[in-house]
Structures are given as structure tokens and as C-alpha cells.
Image 1: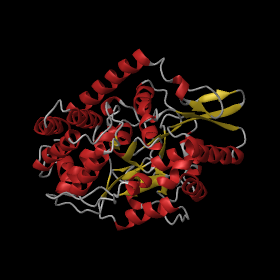
Image 2 (image 1 turned 30 degrees about the horizontal axis):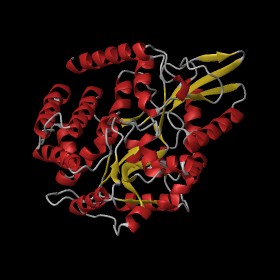
Image 3 (image 1 turned 180 degrees about the vertical axis):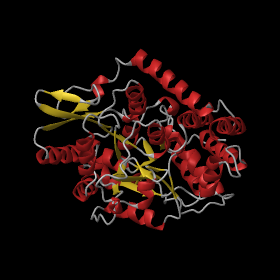
Image 4 (image 1 turned 90 degrees about the horizontal axis):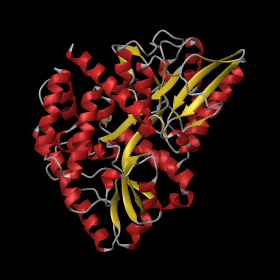
Length: 438
């Protein structure tokens, strides 16, 4: 009952926030067929219209549009209204649509706890008994949208979170890719001495900063740390490793590692990426979606772009090959769709081998499907890192239940702002975890 009350409270709170601000951001959305974003069960004359929401722009959006076109050609009389909603607004928008009973027929997610909440509420179609070949997907990617042995989403992509950097800046100042945290600190000092922002951070929406907490915690306590706290079978979110992770974050802040005002800079708007492109900044910890951004926003910068894995820590017990990542995009179907069979066919087209090959080739991203080959040097590097990783840890905010996920992002942002101590942040997380997970 406690869990249900929390969910209802969050839905009500988000609904009120959304309604107060629903007039904003419309100019950032795009639709392939019409401006209709009314949600599921649309009609257009004699045609059946499926509403499909996703978050990507540029080449990724083009890949999805081509898959939609193939679907429409295979299904005469069916039209897909594909609406792009910027990432930073999407979760809120989707929760409001679900709570109002008017979501799209097909939609994107990252799997994990966010999708599970909808699945538990009976709002996502169980795909287990549909005519789908699940063997084409990587097991760890499909597992992220499988709950109680039932599949609720088909993954297309697999992302990794790495440090990206300007190779020319490093070469100019005699810097090499760091393997240890002390080496990273030395690089930060050199860059500051030369009036270059060491690391771009766009933490207004909190998830970019959360990558640091997750990596520090993993490097300190290993992959079992989060699993133990999440499954409530030993360690908690107030474990000393989580406190120490917060201390590492604040050490970076004290070292002037980040751009001024980083807690107020959004990612989607592109201001942070411009710091990289204009060579005002040297590094950025981000998912491999940054490669897609570079290719669409500043293609001339691609030859300067390098990458390295998160450094090891002197007091760390975690496996240094562990890497942060997520299954995204994951395609799902609203259980209340008037045309569930067609919606299933749509997400199947969005996750075919043809779509996956197009996705990898055009965006430089990893696929969640098996045996998708690529000559892209970035994809080859991502594949190498993934192949030798002992563990790929999914973002906490995509795994934890929504209330706890939001607290995780809130407390981490507070750590970066130094308005909360590491111990206070850890204690708040564990207190809420006892309410939500025990």
C-alpha cells in the first residue's frame, strides 16, 4: 500500500506541474505526419492512425522515420504519427499521458524501473506471446524490459557512458588519456592553468551528474554494491562507498573541474556541447549519443573526438572494466491501444535487423541486436569496451522506482552544488529506500 500511495502521489504531483507549464517547449517537438499529439487511438478519415512518441533527433530520428515508412508500405491504410519530444521533457509528458488515459499507441523508454511502473499498472502490452523472435536481442538488453518473465519492450540500441575529449587539446598540452583518478586530477590542473574548462557538465536535469555518482560507487564497491542496496539483501544506499562517492564528486567541484553554473545548464539545448565544439572545454562524461550530436551539429569536430573509460580509484575495489550503459531506445505498446496488433508490428519494424544495421551505420551507436557489424571506428571502440566489460550497470533512475529515482537525482545534484554533505545524501537515500523497497 505504501508503494501504491507513493506512485499516486508522484503522478498527481507531476500532473499538476505539467498542467502549469504545458504551454512551453512546443517548438522543440517534431512530427513526421501531422501536428496531432493527442495520444493513442487517432483516426484520419478512413485511415488508421497510430501515434508513436520518441525522443531522438538528427540521424536517429531519420532511422526511425525510414522504419515507419517501411511499416506503412507493408500496411496500406495505416498512418503513423511520429512525435519527437525532447528527452528532458519526455518522462513527465508520458506520465501525464498515462495518468490521463491518452498515451500513444507505441512509445520509447529505457526499460528498467520507469517502464516497470507502467507495466505493473497494466498500461503496457505484454509482448511475450506475440510473434516475435526474442533470440535476435542481446540477453542483457532484453532483460532490462523483462519483468516477472514477461517482455514489455523491444530494445534497438545499447549506450555506454564514457569520457569524450578533444584530442588536439590533449596533444597541445602534452596530456594522455588518464587511467587513474590521480592522473585525471593532474589533467584538470593543467587545463585550468591554461584557462580551459576541464570538463563540461550539463546538470540542470540532474541525470548527467548522476553518471559520476554511479561510476564512483561502482569503482569503489563493485557492481554488487547497487544490487545489494536495491534488492535489500545486505548493503544499503548509506554504505560507506556511497558516502565516499559523494566525497569524490565534491573533490572535483573543489578542483574547479566543471564549467561555471553547471547545475543550471541543460543538456538538450546544446550549450554544453558548444563548449566542446568551440574548444572552451576539453572533456565531457556522456553516453555515446554524443557522437550522434557531433555528427549532426559539428561534423568537423569528429576527427578531434577521442574517448577513454572512467578512471580507477586508489581506494576502489570495483572491476575497472565495468562500464555504465543503458538499453535505449526500447519500444513498447500501450495496452489500451485500439490497434494493438498493428502497434506490435510497428515496434517489430523499429527493431528489425535492417533497422539495427541502419541505426549503427548512420548514428555510430551500438545495437541491442546480436551480430550487427560495422566499419565505424566509434562503434568498433564501443563494441570492444562492451565485450571486455565485467558488468554494464544501468542508470539508477531507470532502475529504481520513480520516487527513489528522483531522490537519487536530487541528492546528487545537491552534492554537486555542495548544499548537502555526502553523508546526508546517503542517509536520505537509504531512508527512502526503506520506505519504497523494504
